[in-house]
Structure formats: C-alpha cells, structure tokens
Length: 309
Ligand SMILES: NC(=O)c1ccc[n+]([C@@H]2O[C@H](COP(=O)([O-])OP(=O)(O)OC[C@H]3O[C@@H](n4cnc5c(N)ncnc54)[C@H](OP(=O)(O)O)[C@@H]3O)[C@@H](O)[C@H]2O)c1
Image (cartoon, rainbow, N blue to C red; front, side, top):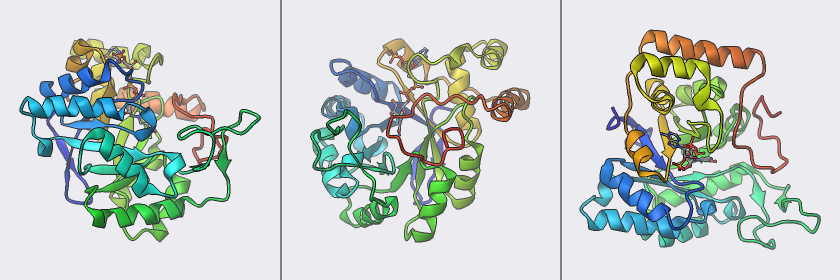
C-alpha cells in the first residue's frame, strides 16, 4: 500500500506516503533522505524554512547517483513567509539548494507576510522580540504570483499549506488555478473535518503533516490507536500513517532513524471497525473541544482554525 498514489487536479499521480524533513538535523538529513529513497519512498517534503535544503539536495543526489530516477521522485517544497511577495525568488533558492531544475509541487507555507527586509532572512524580529510581520498583506496576492510560476516550468503544480476553511473561502473565488493540495496538520486528535470536506468538494488533495503528533507528542500512546495497533499486531505509528491513506489523503512521516524510516513504509488497510473507533475518538475530542494541535508557530495571527480562533 505504500506504493499507492492519488490523482491530483493537475492529472499528476501523487504518492500516498511521503518523507518529511522538518527538524531533520544537519549531519543526519542527507543520509536519511538517501536511505528513504533507496528503501522505496517516492515523495520528499522539503521547505526553505527548514534550513536544510542543501543537505536534502545532497541526499537526493546520492539517491540519483545510485540509480533512483528523478522522474520517480515527487519533490515538494514551500515558499517561506519572508518570500510571499517574491515567490519565484523563493523557489529559485530552493531549487538551487536542492540541485534540481524543477519541483513537482510548490506550496505556500503559511498565509502571512513576514518582513522581507527585516533583520533576518527567515525569522525577522522587531526590537521588542516579536516576530516582524507585515499586517497590510493579502494572501490572495501570493496565490496570484504562484499561478504565474506554472508557466516557468520550475514547478509542475502549486498548492497551499495551513489553509483553514475560512482562508480557502477567501481564496477560491479569486483562483484561476485551484490549489492542487492543502497541506495541513492532520491526525485522529486533529481531524479538521471541515477543511478536509471542503477540499474534497473542490478537488484539493490533502497532505497530512505531523501524523505521529510531531516530535514528542503523546499521540502514539492514545488508547484507541494502541487498540487498533494491538489488533493488527503493528506499531501505533503504522496505524497513524495508515489512517490518512484510508481516508484518501497523502501522509508525511519524518524520521532520521533508519529502522523507523523503514518501519514507516508499512501501511495496513484499516477495516470498518478500526475506522469507527478512530472516528469516535476524533468526534469525542471535537465535541469536548479537546483536539490537539502540535504545530502552531507564534505568529499572533488568526488563521481561522476553530480550535485557535
Ligand atoms: N506545512 C507545514 O507547515 C508543515 C508543518 C509540520 C510538518 N510538515 C511536514 O510534515 C512532516 C511530518 O511532520 P513532523 O515532522 O512534524 O512529525 P511526525 O512525522 O508526526 O513525527 C516525527 C517524529 O516522530 C519520530 N518518529 C518517526 N517515526 C517513528 C516511529 N516509527 N516510531 C516512533 N517515533 C517515530 C521522529 O523521530 P526521529 O526522526 O528521531 O526518528 C520524530 O521525532 C515534516 O517533517 C514536514 O516535512 C509540514
């Protein structure tokens, strides 16, 4: 099942399972990317903001040198918020670091603008230590620039990340090109069903990030997850990854540990009883306002997520 793909609204086939690179430390990520691709991952998720694209690029090169074909790898990267008024500059920087002449998908990382002329390339701050954010900004303008990128051939598709239902509803009436993907935090403790349903209706594919609850999250000890894992005699991580593929989404798993990278390739088919158990768990957390979001950078902006608004 790890080889399964989903068709995007561009006609491209996107792998159901992808390899994440956030917080993959320098000194480890080259080996991790190269190992993952040689073991059979077909999608690598990168970002300028992760500060490790040079090394990810070395890992890609290593895999290509050993016979993995560029056209068999779906490479995703993202424009960082300090580049949201100059997305092509952001893409060019990523392509240079990755050693590629195109990516398969380019995403808007977050719909806000941090000062492009601030005191840091990625995380500019004001004298009082707050993040240096330009509030007079409309995220639709970034999307209009993204649409123009398609003609350059430097990316085969464009999409967004971290778009709530409210933000999508602001964006969609202005789109000439509907985003191919919305990459969001997603797992049974943060089902974000309103966004998933809207994306499905509009033909926007969901890429689920932090499926294991990111680094140090308690998801892998949650009782319903353990129960399904015991029933199928698999790791909780296998259940958490398989959950997304069962519901028609691509899932990203990050690891720099070889045995985990390999183990995460195991995807199982969840049956109706498993799906109900996980759905009941999600519904209960939603009903009691106990959903858990593990990744929420301190931008101080209301992005329209009900659990944060
Ligand atoms: N668009 C966005 O804003 C956004 C935000 C967050 C993430 N993402 C993307 O989504 C990817 C995945 O999300 P994530 O990195 O937050 O978290 P994740 O994949 O949910 O979890 C990664 C953590 O789980 C550990 N792990 C991996 N496999 C395991 C296993 N089988 N058993 C036990 N522990 C395991 C990893 O440790 P080791 O590495 O030490 O093995 C790491 O600490 C990211 O890497 C990134 O590419 C995108």
